[in-house]
Image 1 (cartoon, rainbow, N blue to C red):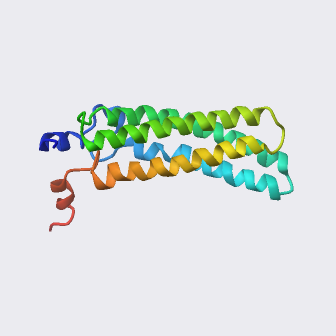
Image 2: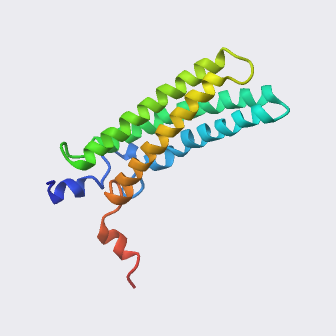
Amino acid sequence: MATPSAHAASKHPRSILAGPYGHPFHAILVAIPIGGWVAALVFDVLTLVGEDQDAFALGARWLIGIGLVGAVVAAVIGFLDYSILTSGTRAQRIALIHMVLNLVVMVLMGASLLVRLGTDGFSLGGFILSLLALGLLGVSGFLGGELAYRFGIRVAEEQTQRAAFEG
C-alpha cells in the first residue's frame, strides 16, 4: 500500500512545464488531439455523404496531422505527470497502461495519415485505422479519468478543495 506521501506527491507538478499546482496542462492539451481526431471522423463521414468530397478528405488529413502534433505535446506533458507517481502503485500501473494505449493510438493515427496521403479522396484503410484508434482512445480516456477523478492525480488536495466551500 502506498504511503500518504506518495498520494500527496501525485498532486504536485514535477516541473512548472506540467502546469502549476491544481492546474495540470495535460488535461488541457489532450483536447487538441481528441478534437482533431473526432472532427476528422466527422469529415470522413461527410466525405462519404457530402458534395465536396475532396475538400472533406483533405480536411480530415489536416485534422489528423494537427491531432498528432497536439498528441506529441500532450504526451510529453503527460509523461511529466507520470514521472511523479510512486513505482508499484495501482495508480502508476494504470497510468502506464494509459500511456501505452495513447502511444498505440498515435501510431495508428500516424498510419492512418500515411495511408491517406497516398489517396486523393476517401481512404477506407485510413478510415478503419482511425476508427480503431478512436476506440482505443476511448479506453485510454476512461483510464485517464480514473487517474484524475478517482485517484486525484494532479488534483488539488482536499483541504484546498474544502476551502472553496467554507465561509
